[in-house]
Image 1 (cartoon, rainbow, N blue to C red):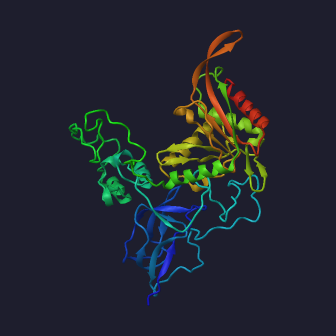
Image 2: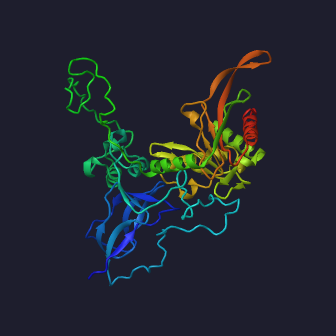
Image 3: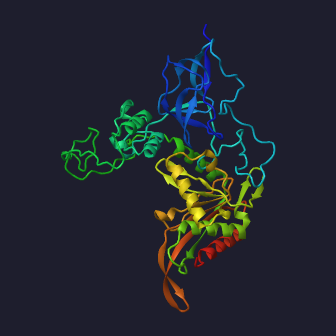
Length: 447
């Protein structure tokens, strides 16, 4: 009887609980060599090629493209070639095949990664925090954003290769665009980004459809305006299971909500004294650094289980980056050592790496305080979420020109709304208020 080996999905990086199958590089019955590409898997951080752990025949594949496989669950069955040299069972493959144990001693204050969470995994920090793992397979629907069906990893690859997904010929089941489709389009130049889209004939206006045929209509059968459906009528929209970055974000935000005691302070930074054109984000970073030096209590990590606090001598700022796939928070390391030009270069590098999904996993954890510059879109004040083990997050709102009282008169000043949410278990209201004042004072400087 043939010796069948089951290969279980390894930990693809720092405690990630699952990964989505983007593309199989083999099919059942194929022969494969040791370390040859087996599958491309999308995690909350990147697209990873998983190598074959054996030389032999592929007997069974667990899951199809778009399925989510949890870490430790079966990925593939092999029939190893008895005449070929195989990797020793204990030999390192570059991935962890099981949960890591907690470190015996806490990390020093200067360590770049956060303290271990209270679980059986050493570091489950991913895009915006910690996640848990299991042994089941989830089947997920493909996102149809932009009128095309593709998983986030395929969209990221298309952006990196400058391929217009709306012009790519889909070969996947149900019209899904695969990684192979994108690579083929990039190779033959059939769907360059920025090319004029093909014109489609305008559809003729549809006549009002009778009720009960599954189509929406503005009027009822009697010709009267359609009323809203009662609660007992099932909605026509189909639920879509979250995956990748957005799946992780949902877990992390729920965990933060359950484990942090948040309190928010808000005020306005007066920018009236600014001289010339200045980099607003760079000034925000500088102001946060100044506030961290003045009040170190908010540039810290807090362990709620052991009631310990770690104050950091350095300032690593997690900068929230919004994408179609969800929220990334890369870390701008050693922000306290950078000038304005260094800050701008660092932010541009991190943002570009996030957008093309090439950012190293080490850059997505270990920040000591975070910034959400939501005002570049809209909004004045907010209650941004503090993600453990951090103690605080700063939110910068939309700039406005406000009428302010000055020496018995009035003037119009440009101002920036600032919100600070902090974990009240780790910092006092007085510390947060002094931190906010130091931040506002630095932003008020001419340059």
